[in-house]
Image (tube, rainbow, N blue to C red; front, side, top):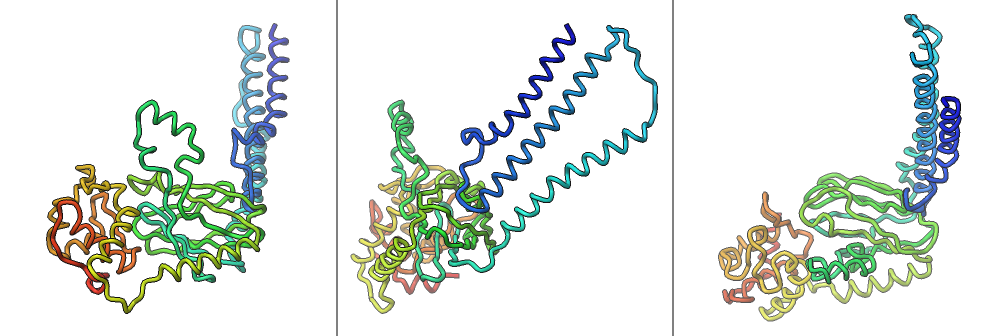
Amino acid sequence: MISKWTKRFAAAAAAACILAPALAAASQYNLQPPQTIIAREIYDLHTLIFIICCVIFVVVFGAMTYSIIMHRKAVGHKAAQFHENTTVEIIWTIVPFFILIGMAIPAAKTIITMKDTSSPDMTIKATGYQWKWGYDYLQEGISFYSSLSTPRELITDNTPEGYKKREAYANYLLEVDNPVVVPVGKKVRIITTANDVIHAWWVPAFGVKQDAIPGFVRDTWFKVDKPGTYRGNCAELCGKEHGFMPIVVEAVEPEKYALWVAEQKKKMAAQADDPNKVYTADELKARGEKVYAANCQVCHQPNGMGTPPAFPALAGSKIATGPKDGHIGIVLNGKPGTAMASFKQLSDVEIAAVVTYERNAWSNKTGDMVSPADVKKLRK
């Protein structure tokens, strides 16, 4: 009976060793299919370590189980009496040493490759904000913000119908209004930093995950193999909206990338503010309504009533109807200890517009106007 059981165990152990590589290759149980050189090296390293761990598990527990069964007292086996076997101690010291060396060499090679950001074809600065990403293409002179584009009503609808809609919604919480666009076959260096708290720029298919830390500059790189849309997230817990700041990268052919760059430059030129323009109150309020919709209404609601206590109402608030400098200051610098983040990333015109709008919308009828010069004076 014992012999039969032992044979079955041996067969199961052999099957485990054989199936380990197949299980590691199954994408539904593993990493995303790699799309860059780095991602492939990480994937291969992960598979190698997984197989080594499976073999160690089978050998150690197989030997332990065999010893427990075959050397038990019930079959008349008597325990050996010995102390300090030099040969055994040398073996169990040397074998793990060589196993660790065998794991360390490919791991060190992969890490060195990951950190080699030299000689990039292009550089993009990714800045984390609560809660969106800002991108600056340093060679092309292109800048834009990338925010979640999944409809807010779909996120907040917790009815049974709402859950069904979310299940059927493609790319739920993984879509943005302005994706990062890069050419295939080019080495792209990503410089990461943050405006407020620690974020992390993470795209699994690229094998890229780099913290974005306020006051520091970190970098990483990738080179996409083939055109496609690749998705990721902020991977550092950064506050209430942490789960709502996805990353979308569109890899396109170099010709399409050149066309995209030209379109972005035209768009930026059309949207650029005239530094010499003197704005009227009506112009600022119209512009401010758009800025509010894009940046503020998620928390403070379109009607300005907020969702107390986390997000107080702006309609009738002491800030929105009080001194202008205090209102500008809280938009510029946020409020420590609360969910109110800094919006320094907005231009002086945008902040002047949104403050003017908030002071004259809903039940707020201050009748005053904030100029871009007022914002520039208080910007630290």
